[in-house]
Length: 351
Image 1 (cartoon, one colour):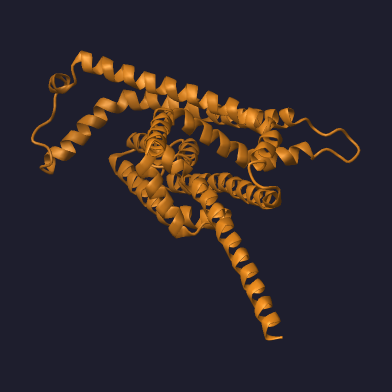
Image 2 (tube, helix red, strand yellow):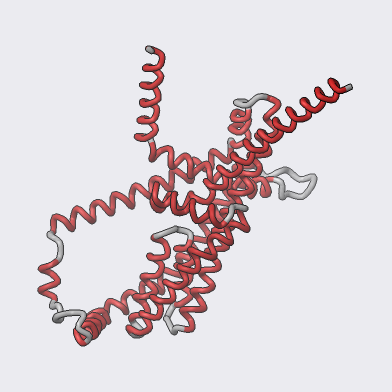
């Protein structure tokens, strides 16, 4: 009885510790996924040198990947930010006229009782204390997110550098006879997570190209910039597409309210196609996870952890799938061994 009570108390303490450390555990898990996904690319760069030449150090291969990502993001920022600033200034200049036109439209159709004056808007705005609290909370959230991102990048770097040592230590937890199977399963997981990363790039490119064509034909200025935002927003489930659609609708307002409405409809249709067709099919082809599992994983991950859960849903489902397949294959192998042994025993008895 004492042992059972102590075991229960220890289990509760461990679960409580895991709950309070959930933020740190999530950062570790994301870093591990990135390290697994980038592992094949790092290995390729390490061995990309010509035969007879010195192999590229692993830390340098990882650093080259990081510098490439930073360079791409910087280039895109230089392409996106200046036009967006110009468009925002133009929108700010025309905003009173656009608001007045929108209110007249709503009043004429009975959707608004009267035109809202600036005094009424100020009166209905939140109190200064509430506004300051909201801004402070937003700044704190952004600062926390930046620190978490930096931690993930640093931890991923060290996980990649020490991947061989860490995996060797992990493999020692299993009997020597099972280690080849563990290594094969780890290779499958690495392949699937890498395929998930490439699938994300394919999805972003598909959404970016379709947004380029749609916004161009709708006559929206700076359509290429807005398409880039849509491509990057695609890689952030749930809120990413919304954040990328808002600038496009605002820019379209500078053309006409009708254009803004058509742009909004375009993004709604695009996201429905993306959610229910592109994501399941591309992830099924790239990662090898069925469309049903992809949709279920996205729903469960989003419900448990929100945006982060939706991002991690597909690679987590792929890892679970590999683990279940290994367990089932081992069960089948053991059953076949028992059947062969039983068959041999019956043959001997009959003879």
